[in-house]
Length: 475
Image (cartoon, rainbow, N blue to C red):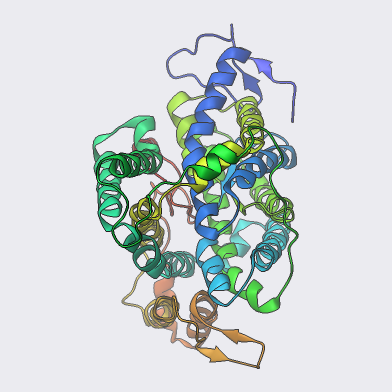
C-alpha cells in the first residue's frame, strides 16, 4: 500500500485506546495538522546536523522530504517514518574535513556509505535480522556508537564553545533544564527549543552588550538573510570519491543498521504488527535515500525517533501524515532566505547544543550495553572494545593517523577504532576458552527492551520506543 488510505471512522474523533493504522487516515485538515507536528519534531536535528557537517541545511531539509517519500514507497507504506539528517555521520565527516576533504569529498564518502547500507539491507532481507546480530552483537554496536559520539568532543569544546563561552553555557543549561521540566512533545524538541533560546539570546546581547570582545563582530549577522531571495533552488554539489575518505565515514553504517532496526521494532510494537520481514527493506530504503540525497549535495538520512514519539503521543500512524510532512519540508527547502536564517546561527549556540548532542550519542552506546546486559567482566567484551574506544577518542582532532599503511592510505580515529572493536571482538571470541564463550549466551535484551538493536541520532539508542519513554527528548 502506498496511497489510497481508508478514512478512519468519521475522520474527526479517535476513541480512547484506539489508533489510526498506517493505511488509514483522519480527515485531510487533521492529517495536515499532524503532518505539521512531524515537521516540527524533525526540524531541529535535520538542520543542525548538516550545519555541523558543513553541508547546506536548506538542501538537507528539502532532500529529507524527498528521502521520506522514497522510503515510504520502498517499504510500501508499512513503516510510517520520517527520514531526517543523521548524526551518526558527523564524526566521520569531521575527520574527512580535518584530512583536507572538500564538500565534494564529504558527499562522495557519504554516498558510498549509503550504497553499503543499502546492500546491508538486501542482506538482511535475504538472511534475516539474526544474521546481522551475529556479526554486530550489542557489545560491538554499543562500542561503535560510543566511539562515534565521544570522538566529536573536541569539535564541541574546541571549535564551537570558545566562540562565545557564556552563550554556549546558557544554551547548554537551557537544554538540560528543558529536557527535565518539560513533558510530552515539548520535551522531545528540547534541543530545538534550546537552539531558539540561544539564537534569541545572542541577538539580545548584540543589542545590549555590543559585539564580542575577541572578534569585535556581532554574534548574529543577518546580511546574508536580507540579500537572499524568498524563492529559489538550493545550490547542488557533485560528489567526488576517495577510498581513504570513505573508510572514515563507513563505521556510521553500523549505527544506522541498529537505528533502523530499532525504529522498525518500535513501530511494530505500537501498531501491533509483525514488521520483522520489512526490516531489511527499511534499511535498504534508508541507504537508497542517503545515496539520492548526497548525490546532489544533501545530508545523509536516517529514520527519526522524534517522529515515532509524535506517533506515540497522537496514536495516529497514518503514512498520509508523513507525506504531508515531506511536502512541507520540500517547500521549505525552496526558500533560500529561510536557509540563511539557519546559517546565521552563532557558533556559541552550536557549542551549547553540541556538548549535549555529542555526549548523548556517546552515552547511548552505553545504553545499548546496559539494556542488553553486556558483561564487561568477560575479556571478550572488555579488551577489544576498550582498545577500539580509546583509539577513536584519543585520535580525535589529530591530523596524524595512528596507522599509516601506504603513502596515500592510512587509518585512525573512528575508522581504526571501529575495525579494532569489530574485528578484535570476533577474534577474541574465536580464541577464548569455552567458559567465556558460554558467558556470552547469557547476554541479551531485557524482556522490556524489545530489541537488541538501538537508535542513534541524537536521540535514543538501544531499545524500542516504549510508552514510558514517550516524554523523553531525543534531539
